[in-house]
Amino acid sequence: MHNLQSLTLKDLVDQARQASVNLAQTSVQFRNLALKDLAIALQSQQDAILEANTLDLETTRDLAVTDLALQWLKLTPDRMGIVRQFIEQLAGLPDPLQVRSGTVANSLYNLSGFRVMPLGVVCGLYEFLPEFPVLLASLCLKTGNSLMVRGSAETSHTHALFSELIKTVLSKGKLDQRCFYSFVSDRAVTPKDLVAQALPIDLVIPYGRPSFIRDIAQQKTAPVLTPAIGNCYLFWSSTGSSDLVRSIVVDSHLGVPDAVNAIEKVIITPNTNFSLLNVVFNHLREKKFTLKADETLTAEFPDLALAEDREWSTPYLNKTVAFKVANSVAEGIQWMNAHSSGHADCFVTDSYRESQQFTLGTTSATAFINSSPRFSRLASGPYGTVALGMIGRSSFNQGAMGVETLLKRSHIVQGVGANIAC
Image (tube, rainbow, N blue to C red; front, side, top):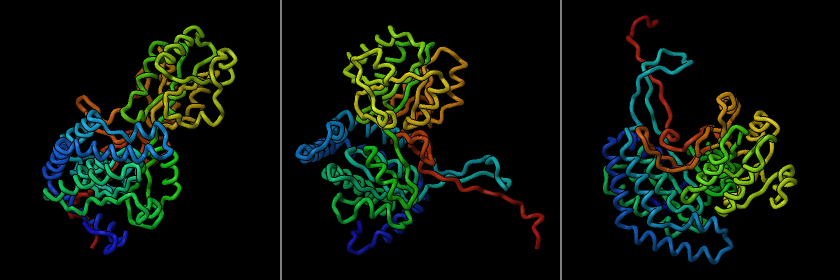
């Protein structure tokens, strides 16, 4: 691969753009073969990957990092298995790069169809989640995008090994090797260098703590996705089941390793049965949750800690849940729209009318009614797909971050040559 001593960042991006064009024109069989080879390489090199990850963990433990960061950083055989399943399932999906028939609403022209195309050059910036470059590189291979990726110092050993595996797989196949470039986590090229300059990068995807994502978004010159983690809301209607509420809250926190759609706030109405509420509290305490509440509920339940104003808009990123009273469903939805992360909010009710009120009133990218929002990178069923994360209401592209996130359309107008002015 080229190095920065001979090529500027602009040169690298230009080469990556041409590589994306070449990759999009490469048969899907070759792209899928590269994905399958990558999954095999991850299996054969698992021991070496876990050893590199152990070095990262040992280095990071000497630093002042949180338990959450260490949890994200620690790879396990089970997590590696999920990564391989992600890649294998991605390889089994239909080719996303094809001409599709049909018209597009509100078009100026009589469209014969549209072509689905890669965005071009994607820049991935991450911290603590060591499998991120492999997951994102796999999505880029499938969709014909080039990837430039940079990790943090905490993942340096694992990042280097993953990058070498990806490069080796690319060198074996009939793919343009310039479609992947990895930056080491030193000061030679910083995240600011990649996002704050006027580089022709088509999309920046940061992944990490909210503060990390916020810093990248504030420096951007290219479009930036803003993945959201935690601070999901659940509205518990007085008609809803308390058993369902407590099972949904617990289940939402079971993401491995990052509980992307964790419910951290619960809104209730004044006519909620306080006996049932207390049952929910006790169940969550048994599951090692920390509970907080607003002033109304702390007056009724003095053992609950008072949630500060800023906490309603901030993810805890741990097993903490705060409860709040809203005077009506409409007021609760309004509060939720103003304070949740806006990527996965829930409603528990037995009322069809209330469910419709929630559906029409919520601005969340994904709304769950009587269903757990638990996040998995692998979606099963007849429409099974994969997702890297979730995007909230504030981003230009909402919902699950997957194959469609990395694509764009080119409209096709087919004429017959008649009635053209000469």
